[in-house]
Image 1 (cartoon, rainbow, N blue to C red):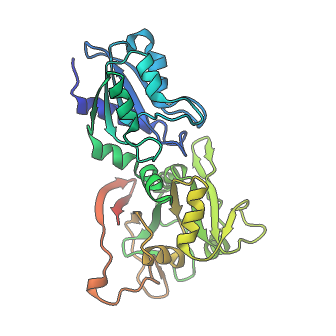
Image 2: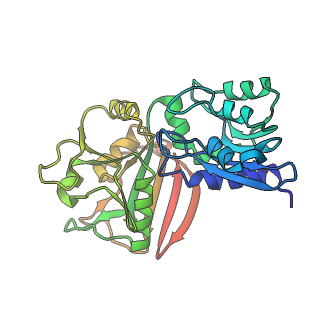
Image 3: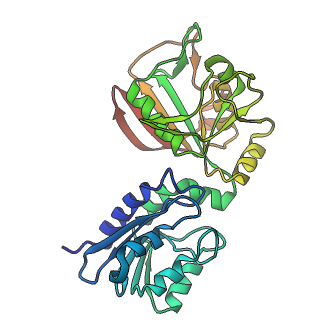
Length: 328
């Protein structure tokens, strides 16, 4: 059975997802080696920094079968020397005849140059197959390479009427265990998690990602000063202009920043126009406004023309709750 290029790229995207927790600050790339007869002979994904990129991993597994084959790779192969050697040279040396690429690498050291090197060596190259899907998967990497700042994801967990804390201040747990586990996956996908000092004082979160028997520890960032005995320690304490905070975190190779703060912190990020993506978990419950705290109760919107609008990109049920993803 021969697969269409779009089908092969979808498989490469799935392979890249296996590197989501491993690869950062490198991109989580997937690659396939497909024989002239249309048989997938190898799959690879980016390993931890300093080890093989997806292309080299797939070539290693393919061995001699790579000669004359097609490589399908989500992101343009690198052509510069970093922690590892250039992937384009490995592709050329392996005798690959054709390369299908999902999207160009926005990194200034690579963008377009990998494609040029492959073509100069006589390798046929096709670019842009399922490019939108690849760019969605690599959104935080691409944003960081273009802006130097992290891709900012804000996470809420609320009742259907947007309440995050009850009249007595209690908030654990509004959503069910399935949604909470999903939120831990979101933490693990982020290189840093940020909360305000008020959230640390009221909830004392550890901000680790607990996935079955695996504990992932992103950089923990507190706006303000965390109490000395807080579970969040060791943490990075920051203050001042939020844009400068993002600049500093981008310089620390934080590709994706997850903001989990309370209404003060989340309202400030949205008001400043610094949010790329919102993940909103809603429980089928109602709390009312009397004495409770709304997720964005400090966000001011004086007129309908000032309403902040986004684009819904996904809605799904998780356990008894709903997850809504919005690009803003």
